[in-house]
Length: 376
Image: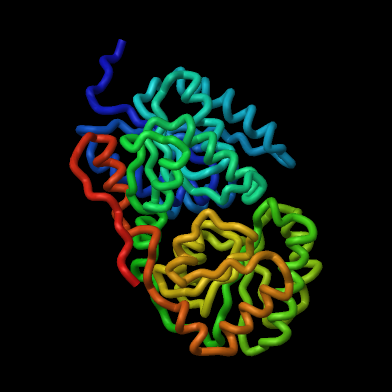
């Protein structure tokens, strides 16, 4: 029988592109210290093509790929398959720690499987809350379950830490480390700055499950009205492959000369477009965190957000999914230089690029300094 290494055995699990992007800095920080950590990486394949792009870009090479994605897979189907598959992985790997990121079905199922195996769970990006289990769905429920099960909670901000303490989490379990997406963003953005576009651009991302149906159609109606009212701007929308998004997007937004419906950008191209755009219209959590690094105002196309720090800092605004509100707020940023300048401040309340190193220090029992955002 092979003798077990004295290094801590870490199993890092992810299933979607955002998870991979945010997990990569942690894996890199742990692998820089092979004397302390033996790291294995497991991809569930909850997403496939978009996940593969991110892994290649960030140098992630999974030791295990569970390939769980199925056509028209239900949440329950994915969750049950992920729990069963992760149970087998945990039995074979016997890690000291399972690391999960965020609030996906992969992260929740892996955490539950680890809990059943009495494996300690470390939750990266713990403590985000809207207070509404339906928004975002199913993410709000997923992250609450993970935080309940986790032995170590890596909160991105002090607000997230306070949310966890208010729910009764022991203070010694909670650590404010910043958001690892800022680590990844700083790495990817190096050397990407280029000449400005010939025409000013607005970047759009819309894909959230709770917006399917009438809310999504309202968002798209607003985008069409804006594109028609401001023809001097190019409106760039990389359309999510989910048919609940793709169908209405092409139906409502197709045929506009200044609104470009793209296939999903890989992460490098998304960052490049983010760096050069005028502002962002999005329901994405990641872009709410990333855009302030480059001083890009964010209009959040959701009814609630678990990332209120950007709103408090004045670099983001929650506008909902109603057509009139979206048109009004976007028009204000397009027509008023003063309104745009008021939000276009490169102050990022979410991270400083050192979250991965903090997490490695915590797992290794070493001294570290909590993340504190800069003052505006």
